[in-house]
Length: 260
Ligand SMILES: [Fe+2]
Image 1 (spheres, rainbow, N blue to C red):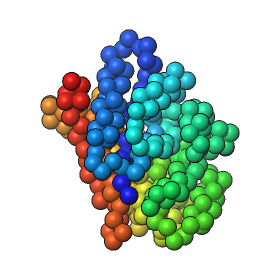
Image 2 (cartoon, rainbow, N blue to C red):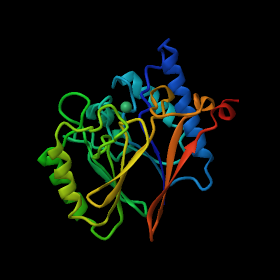
Image 3 (spheres, helix red, strand yellow):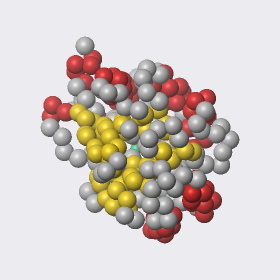
């Protein structure tokens, strides 16, 4: 199974006169074109949150219009910029998100690796959190298929990103400890994919490899990139191998070629 992972697109309104938002649209367009050009095509694309800048209906409408040309199924988890209601309203039509659930929590069953979306949003502000309801739901979902390799995907990474000014993305250390306690009961969990930090980072959480991807929005991408990379978004392609788990490639999109 091959998964393309994108995150932190931070799209604005289609009518915005701000060139920053025009550039972010082009970033996502170029990234989608690159994904569609992959041979073989990925089986799925996961977006690990912050699809939009302000969580506005007009921003979700623009996002949907851009994502429409993707040639593979997209699954999304909410970022703090989106809000869970905005994501549910925008993507319920695709059938995998409940329009009226308390959280954005679902499992995708039709691929070789089971995908489980985890809602990591805190109640206030940009940081993440987990409550007992969500962790109990995750525990029950994982208990349904103990024999299937499973990847979790969420917005906030449950580990310290040491290069970030604020290394820890959650409101409480206990939230990650509680998540780890659940994961440790389900050895079929093979990877945790996250976003939020806008830079690539990898760690091990409860014995499971966990990683973040760079922001697709090049103006929000952190880390050092060569000057020629200024307009080229970066995303990741993860290929699952039975004997070693996910093997990941960081893809540099050829923005200029895609724009011709
Ligand atoms: Fe973000």
